[in-house]
Length: 171
Image (cartoon, helix red, strand yellow):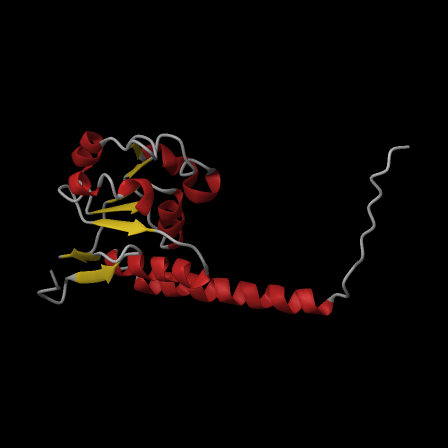
């Protein structure tokens, strides 16, 4: 399925599946901590997340985290609870969520992530930014990260390397 009008958004996820939305996702469920990190960078809050995870940590959503519904565990997401929340998009990880995709995609489009590395991470942020109509926020976050990395590079090259001697002998 390819976009039919200018409101459609289309990306290819990390497992090679095309994810198409007829309009920007506003209600997002995250089945992985990486999704929470992405949404936080995009200044968005999920409507559903795992019962044991990082969304309730203050650096992500502060006291607003209590508004996020539990949708089960990473290995066993609760399909019925996800359906009740009526998401526009579900963000998961290739393992284990590809096994749930036949049921999840009947609820909402599913964006699956896999792999690691700098470029892969940036592409995920851009993809979700496209799907949620937050491309400007994604590019701002990437620019800020690159500025921070450059500052750390400059800082690390201005200091002479230090030698550390550790004595582990018993006295």
